[in-house]
Length: 448
Ligand SMILES: [Zn+2]
Image (tube, rainbow, N blue to C red; front, side, top):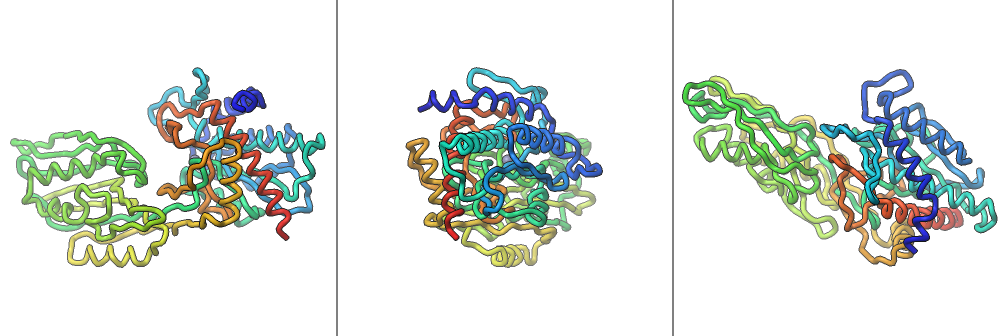
């Protein structure tokens, strides 16, 4: 089966992916008609032009998103959702020079999410060809691929699409893991503001720290300014292990590590003592007073992603940006209440709270079972559907769940240097998506 899959359209998929990877579709300042800057816009245009050339009907949504589809125009619509923007290359010089090494297709966006978009495109192309040649009947629904240009920085693209364009009856987003992800934890980001007593300037005392880039990234390094014997400031770099905020057990937070070390040397610093009481080295939410778990999605996690802190004349001032992933059965209000209870009487206060409710679709739901069936049929595998701590487009567009393309054994270098997708994963994903799209079209199209 593997060889058969590899023959079909593999070369054209690689060529299409190469062209897309070479478009630097990082978010930039808006320009007229290009709300996320020129790169994401150019990627949308290139994709839609290719789709039109392959014979699809196409549409554009004001530079925010675009779509392509086939199937009877008077029928309802099912489909898939992918994104064409990428996270910055950050120290990876060759990120936009697409390269094939053995079976690896290397370049920024190859796995997240241009490769999967190409897999869906060619899954649809094969279905369309098979309908035209009479190997398949006309589908009972239109089949559409929706493309967004701002998934990595807030999914404004999908908010725009949902407001102005047609919503699928059922869809998957090809931007996470196989098999189906039927639950995503709640996302909560807030800032703790500190204004209170701190250590006086003396040897070994903490003067300031600025570290972290994003709340959802576990910082791998942090630079602390510490007073030396002459009361000059000395920089001290603390190394941890960078990671994704949803998986703190795989990383080590350099900000937290450094502050704990400072406390051990300066237990009399009132700021550090309070920090230890409220955050410390903890990522379970226990110190914040919000720890817990449910059977469906496991434990809450928290990450101190960004810090700005400064002490002067015995007074400390700081901001601490924290990203929390909470269990799917929990409500935001109860977490906020617990946080406020914990902070009462401290010098920390709660500011700028953003949250997204959890997503949960039971395993018995027909969308879950159709996607699971396609996965099992093509691969012969039998993993259970997943619940994750990360967030995908599934929260931004109704009737949608995340589905592939990463297999459980795949190395996943999304957002990292050396990002790649293997030819096997690309081709297997295409084969699974082809089955899934057809089954969704037939099942939902015949429901009425
Ligand atoms: Zn993605």
